[in-house]
Structure formats: structure tokens, C-alpha cells
Length: 306
Length: 291
Image (cartoon, each protein chain N blue to C red):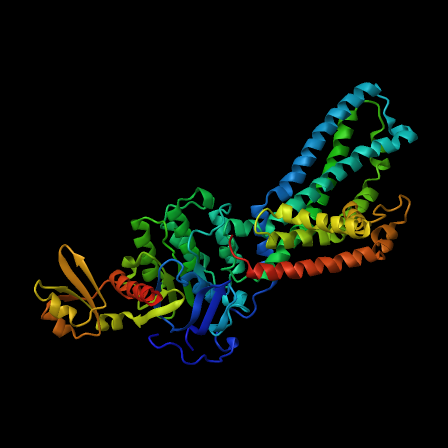
């Protein structure tokens, strides 16, 4: 090594014995997702906590209801059926809402935290590509959180039914009707559809943007995430006196125009919500999300600890 | 094919030149120490080798382009960066699981065996380990990987003497063999003296010394001059002169050892003294040139 290199050999990387040729691409991805769950336990603890608190409130409500009703349970009264469904929908809404908040904060920190605590140097010392890393971090808000929240919401509703039955047992109420009239199955399908489409696909550009900011921000990613939308809104308002961007943003945040299936839609149309996939906003959003992701992956390659 | 080959490797941050077109060639099975003052470009050079930063010029590590092929390269290259970079939230068992999961060349039994010799508990989180223990854990993970190149950037920074000694002992006894290459940067040069096979000094983005330890023994001589012989010794153009306890110590490059022995006691200089002589002279020259 005493002589400075005078020739760079043009040997191909494959000419020497490398690591076992077949080392599945899925394996680093799987372990990357697992490591995200180790680090971010809030991802499942927050919806679990929300479910627990909701169940607690539900039990108290049930007990007080029993005394108020003096054994006359409204299950038999048709007009009140909707009121009975309400807590079930509320529990799902609460859990999915928590999931959204957790997903947003997770995404903002995903590529920023590893730079702040310098652990990016450790992650980059492993044979895991930047693409695998960023995609595994995207999978958390896009797949893992919605699926976990869905499962938690389902279990919660099941427990609510069990609790309602237990509390009302011996009160003279028609418990069988509680189970048969409760649109448990239909509702879970609705929720599954909502989770898959709205949380998985509709919010993809939102999470893509947050990951991009998380990879780019020198500090305070929250500010960097919120600032550009404000600037665009302000400039548009000043220049053209229009608010197209703002309304676009609101549509994106509040969900697609008609996320709820009609209650009496037939089974197949619930499973295959064709008009959801007909919306150009969905596909435009996915395209934007893809661009954000490509930039985030590229940024992660250049980024070191801060 | 050499382990690392660079030609005209250049990197600048704005107007600051971190690497000023260096050429370097590290053969397989060497232990190279890169020594340089703060901001000399050591870490930049290592980052380029590890594919952490883009660069200009040609660079091949194990035959690959580190910038475009980092993830494949990392199957054969390990590195420990300047301070403990293990995530603070991770548990020891999780760290082992993770590396075992993503690294095709990781030998779990080896890592477990190394950890068994320490007091580190599997269920501890990294943030609850002492600095020395974190270094041990990182070393355990890295040594269990059957890599061809190990890059260490100030691996023992902030560790006490016992941990430092243990670190290099483990590295030499349990890890190093003639098939592996190790590149290490450090400021604690004394401990490396007997570990290295090659030595490189970097200053302000340039390589100012690059030779094997055998060559250093052959080329450089330190002379503790007998009083009265100082003028004669100075006439032989020493690189550097310093005073220790009232005696002059002169460092020579390429002057005959026998000839020097007549003027006083001769021995091989330590890396630290050599560094001060070579890099210190450069700094003086640069100042002189600037005036």
C-alpha cells in the first residue's frame, strides 16, 4: 500500500464470491417493519388504550342504562335501533381517528429521528437499501396501523356486545335480538373497506409527504410539513384570489366524497366499491404519493446524522 | 484486486475541500491506521468508502462502487462509527435479532458467545448500558459478521483504558485473520502502534504519509542526542527537534541508523512523535508559504 494506486481494476462485482445468492428481498423488509414496531410501540398501544377507555365508558353507560330503563330494553323498539348502533360506530371512529393521529406523528419522525439520534449510521451499516427502509416505514401508517386498528376495533365491538349481554342478562331484555339485530357483520365490512381505501389509499400522499419532510427537515419536521401548504394557500389567495389548493387539501383530509356505502347496498358492491376506484382524485393522489416516496428514498441516501 | 482503490478521490463542502484528490490502495489482509488532525478529512474518506456520501473521482471497495451499491457492499463491509450509534431504545436481544434478520453473513452463536464474556444482559436497553458496554455490544454484533472489510471510525472514543485495550485485543485475537482488512481512524495512536500493519497520515484533505510499519522502522529514526553532538546531528537535517528533560530528541527520515548511533541513542519513533514531526512540519510549511 506504499504505492498510491496507479490502476483501478475494472473487475465486475459479481466476479468474487458474494453473500449467498438467494437472500430474500422480503426478509430485510420484514425485519425493518419489526424494528419499527419495536421502536414505536405507540402504534399499537394508542389504539389499544383508546379501546380500553371506550370499553370502560361503555360499561358505565350500560349499567346506568339498565337502571334507567327498569328492565325495558329498547332493542325491541324499532325507532331506537339506530341509537343502539351509535356506540359501536363511535368506538370504531375513535379508534380509527387515533390511528390517523398516530400515523401522522409516526411518519413525521420516521426518517428524522434516526438522523437526530445518529442511529442512521448503524442502520446504514446493514445491507438494507434505502428503498427497503423507506418502504418499510411507509408500510407502518399505510398497512400496519390500519390493519391493527381494524382488528382492535372489531374485538372492541365484540367485547361491547358481550358486555351489553352480560349487563342486561336477567333484566328481561331480549338479548338474542341484541345479537341478531346488531349489524355486526355488515358493519365490520364497512369498516374494513373504510380502513383499506381511506386509510390505505386515500391518505397515501399525506403519508408520502410526511415521510419526505421527515427525510429532508434539518430540524422541526412538523413546521416543515405544515409550512409549504400555508405558503401555497397564501400565494394562491394573493395572486389569483382563489382557494383551489385549500379545497383540494380539505378533500384529501376529510376523505373521499362518499366513503360510506349505502346501508342497503348489496353484499358484492360493499366488497368491490367500484365508484371509489373511479375517482380521479384517488389515482392523482397515488401518483403524487409515488413522487414523494421517490424523493424521500433519494434524500435518505444523501442524509447523515444531524 | 485490492480491497480499497481510490484515484483522485475528491470531496468538498461548499468552498471547503475535505478530500483533495487522494490516491490510495489498501490490499487485502492489512490493518491500516488513518491518523490526522481534526477536520483533516479522515471521516469524509471513510464515509466515501462506506457509500455514505457522494464524491468525485474513482473509488472501488471490494470491486464495487460504494455510492451506488451500498446495500450490496454492506454484506461484506462492517463499520463502527465514531461514537456509539446503536439506537438507544433497542434491547440487546432485539439488536441481535435484527442483525440476524437482515444480515446474511451474521453468525448468532458467535455474537452470543462474545456477549457471554461480558456483563451485558439480553433484556437491557442500550440506553441503560454504559458507554463501554455499548461498544462491547456493537463489537459483538460486528465480529459475528463474516465481513471482508471492517471500518472503524474512532471506535474507542470516550472509553476508558481497560475497555480500549480489551477492544483491540478482541479485534486482533478473535476477529482478525489474513483474509480480512481493517481500516481504523483514531486519535489514541499509542494503543494502535503494535496493531497496525500500515500507517497513513492525512492533513487538510491530502495524504502526507503512506507506508507500512516495516518501512517506518526502516526509514524513520529517533535520536536522543548526546550533549555536545547536537550541532553535528542538526547538520543531518532532522525532520523535527524537541526537548525532553533538557535533552534534544531529533527525528530523521532516511538517514543511516549506524551513522546516527555515533551521535546518541537511536530508536524507532512512536506514531505520535512521527505524526507531530510529519504533520507538524506540514503545518509550519503551510504557514511559511502563506506569509
